[in-house]
Length: 427
Length: 166
Ligand code: SF4
Image 1 (tube, each protein chain N blue to C red):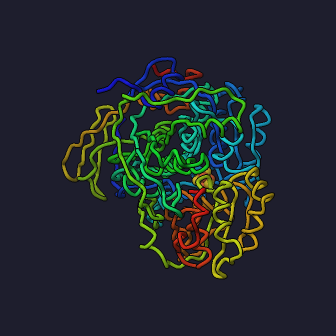
Image 2: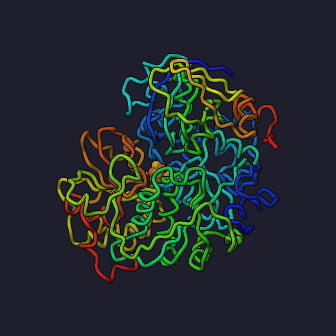
Image 3: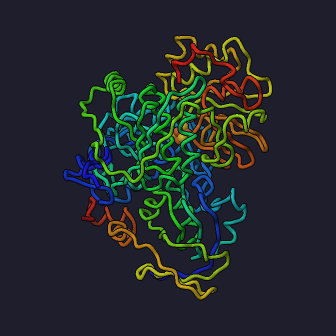
């Protein structure tokens, strides 16, 4: 057995001030913490009950109003109000309605950099693993304890490493990769474990596309979804943050719980069928399933690249008249860029309804709740029964390209029929 | 801590959207209100079947999905005494301890709906009174026992002002 360390062991060790290995339980110093509008109000209440008057370091905290934004109901408005007041009192950065989804904002606004230890009161906090941070989701009371003390306890997880070989074919994207992997290992294939993604397929992807993969590590139960930082990562992070950072690499003799290798050169577009994310099928199996709503956005696939892929497919075409096509850019910055370059115009001309940057209809609070018996195809990360606000609807998950192609045809469609060699830069 | 009650049986991968749907959790912090909708999409009148102290028993990966603490809270406020499963999703497990809901990991294959159980958390055993069986329980890590003993993480911080678990 080697004695080398994984990325996780190194990051947690550096923040605990001692050498650690998988299985150890330690208290570690946090670099940043985040709460959203579904979880912050409970954290604020917990702080009150803990009798904490001042946060340990308000500069290390951000709160985001994205899940139900703008507020659709009085009850939600009261919770938002509570967050705004708290942020002002404590001097915490607040991203109000329209700024975007928390998991887009944390890296985009420069709060998270490689080597960081970050917690967020939202399960998809694992997204920032794509830029080499150990980032994990916690609940509201943990967030409160973290805000109060600047620290949190962790059990150092073992790591499962995925080595992804080959080259993705045209029309197959990072979303297809992660759906495929979740289908392989199932929804609890990595419970209590960290996951590391490496190999030529990851190297080829843009940083934006890598976020999609780390975002969904939790859908196989993963505590974090890490990648090493390469030149692309470093360039991307420097464009978004002034914070100093040191990337963390795994030792060549690091000890892994498991190493899984896949050659993805022949991968086809993948779709997760209702009602679990690991219920994954190749596109052929679901092609032709009628859909009534198509959703492009969320913290998984609401980035500029995602909107561009959809626009490339929809340019000069029309969304099927029986389909509502809802687009939610993941942040205001993305929205503006997509507007300036004409991407939003292309989508709207094709028939898209663009909603406020944020979570959009992802979690069923507003912005497009499906009706009984309806089928939805979405770029989101979860398709649980009731996820979009109606337990009698059916949610399919696919890449932005698959969603765009399906929106045109009014049924689940193969995006490869709409893309040519020239579109390969988006893979 | 001794718990006693009857079993409500669920399968694998019971996710947090089933435990409490997102459409409710954003509306209010009133946990008694949220508790009425617990497990609604799996069993529409589940709440009305619960007697104080009953158990939820499930297979693997209980509580997967979102980080919403409203999930263990809704279960606790619905009157459930403990959740017993073969395995739990990590965030749910932590949240449950933090809010003071006992979560117990053990082999649940022999437990059926309606069985009467007696749980001794301290000794780490479950007695299935209906089937006359004893089931061994996986012990909690020390840090969690400490937090549970303080009545959850809020109690722990009130007592110490910070983490005091090492
Ligand atoms: S977009 Fe969906 S998955 Fe992402 S943070 Fe918002 S609700 Fe959660």
